[in-house]
Length: 114
Length: 111
Image (cartoon, rainbow over all chains, first blue to last red; front, side):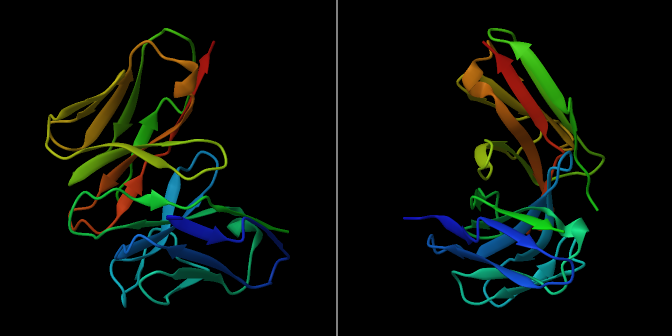
């Protein structure tokens, strides 16, 4: 049972380049989330998928797109990276969205945009 | 947008001392969770409180949800070096769809 896995672990991009961050969970969870973590800012929600087939914007969605590929996988795409997107990105999942369920986090992707 | 402010942002104390971390908002939350994060890892859940006024204990850690479900506190008794980490509170929205995370408290316990 791997839990939540994220790839890559580290990435350096030049301004304007694109990339996709991958996330997969093997816990049969319905809900999945993408966050970014910057110093002094805690975790901020970028996009989430409450259930397979749905996606919604979070607090900071600008510059990002997501795809809920299937129940297991939820990817985050940066179409044209900007230095302001330098951050640590976390994917999380939880069983559902109709109760106080625990969120399970991946190990994170550290992204630097130069 | 719901906001959660944590205080203090940084706390460095000696082993054996007691401490309290606060999590405050002007919004009402359906539940409040506390997570702890180690360097290079994702956050891990410590506790969930749901009812206003609820108190939960986890060994030396005591968590309380405010009566109005707008705030919470984490109290650690006799802090140990193993308590070192980033503590994050997170409030659940009224639709139970997503969490809003606090700004975090970085705790260092000096042996």
